[in-house]
Length: 219
Image 1 (cartoon, rainbow, N blue to C red):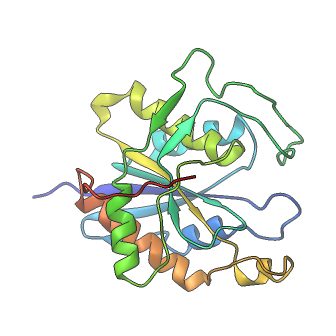
Image 2 (cartoon, rainbow, N blue to C red):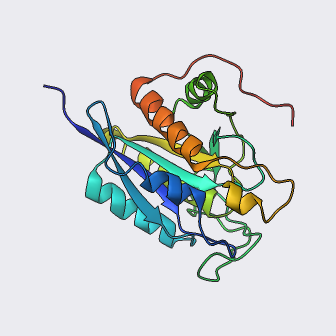
Image 3 (cartoon, rainbow, N blue to C red):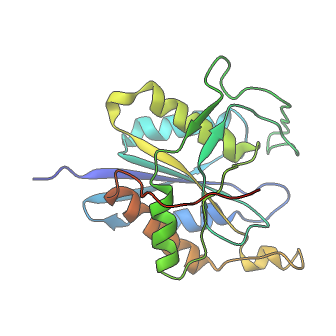
């Protein structure tokens, strides 16, 4: 009989004076959802440098997941954007929820400059588009807590290869009620975001080797 597996989905608490964070609203809607023999577990991460990686490590230790998808808000983006690469730098444009604002500081001192996602990011984009959800590959996760936790996740995976864990990061747009405060900003409904994450999880579980398809950008 096939072994049951756990999928860890993480979202952040609100930051930068927002009342909510779409990453947590979407992620928590999938807590307990079963995708084949896998069960999704949602955990909220603090939008705080250092603490976010510690909380992620605790959730991984608790759940021993087969797959981890960290989700974050990217206000101003109009699509679901799986991230390609995490870089080893913290450079806060604003302070985090604990008032920390590291500048040009490595996420993990002495560790590699970058790690690539081990999610099938192009297959995820393909399947999202096929379902009518705007999506594209992103080549920058920024330098705030989203990139910070993404790098921490990939560093953990690299340090524990025998565990067979795969993971990565996906950015999602504002919710409409957030975008209303920023005229002209794109948004996406919560229902569409939740459906998109269902597709992302299902594709990540089903696809081991990513598809050979262009996802590059000129700029």
